Each structure stands twice: as structure tokens, then as C-alpha cells.
Amino acid sequence: QVQLVESGGGLVQPGGSLRLSCVGSGFTFSSYNMGWYRQAPGKEQELVGKIASGAGAANYGDSVKGRFTISRDNAKNTLYLQMNNLKPEDTAVYFCNAYLAFLGNYWGQGTQVTVSS
Image (cartoon, rainbow, N blue to C red):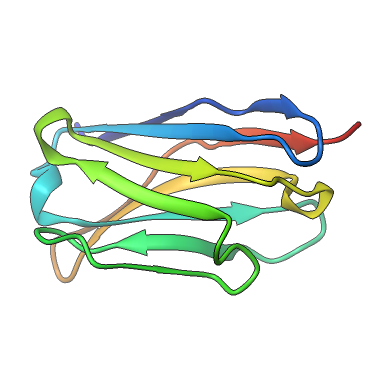
């Protein structure tokens, strides 16, 4: 069955960095558009960044532009999110998403990122 398993979350001080990973299985990873979303307590889900299949064109939510970088390794079925200069407002559960029109829209279970001193 389809699985998306996130890892790499944790507690980090403001200004620090984390790298999240998401390993996909049960579907053709390279064909899917992939993305990271986040949700903080009491707030709506927010796009962090997404990356297209194939050539991997990426775009980002305004709040993370210039600080976060999304990438993918199709040979390893893995999506990454490099997060630099983290701020307390980046605290949220981060979810991995795989999407291909008419075929599938899949979500991971999420990984907690807490930015606090």
C-alpha cells in the first residue's frame, strides 16, 4: 500500500537548521508532484513548498522563501526539506504530500518541528 514516512523533526533553537525527509513507497514516486505542508495549533494548513516530478521545478510559500529548500531524489524515493534560519513561527507539524491528478493524493503522518529557545 502507499506509504509516506516523514522523519527529521525535533526541537531546535531560533536561527538553527533542520532537514526533513519523506520516503515514499507503494507508488511511482518519480511521477508524482511532491510537497511539504504544515499546520500549527489553531491555524489552517499552509503550503511550505512543492516540487514537480521530473525536472523538479519548485515553488514556496511566502513565509519560507529564501530560508527553506525543497529537493527530491527519485532514485531513493525521497523528498527533502532543508530548513535554515528557523523562527518560532515555523513551529508546526510538517506533512509530506504526493499528488498526481486523477491517480492519487497521499499524505504522511507528519513530523513535529518546534523552534524555541
